[in-house]
Amino acid sequence: MFPPGTNIALTMIKESSLLSMITVAELTYAAHDINGRTFTPVETFATIAVIYWIICTVFLKLTSMLQSHVDTDGLSNSVAIR
Image 1 (tube, helix red, strand yellow):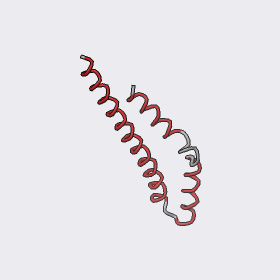
Image 2 (tube, one colour):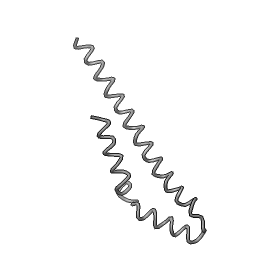
Image 3 (cartoon, helix red, strand yellow):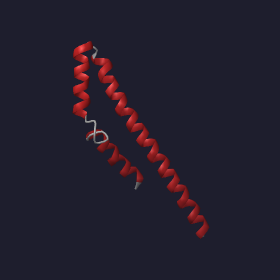
Image 4 (cartoon, one colour):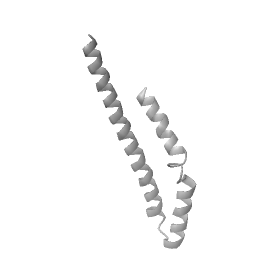
């Protein structure tokens, strides 16, 4: 159940607003604003990509740790029952 749930949650993070406060449109608008002042499109949009990459990586690590914790608990309980 964890892998499909993780995929769905990760898709929701990528396609919806970020933490309900910073949306993709707001980040893109901020990047366009910075790009208009500094004329550095690669750096500004790369920064947005890195922000999303970090958030998704942290989320995947947390779900991986949770899954391994639940799997370990289930394994020790099944061994104790036998």
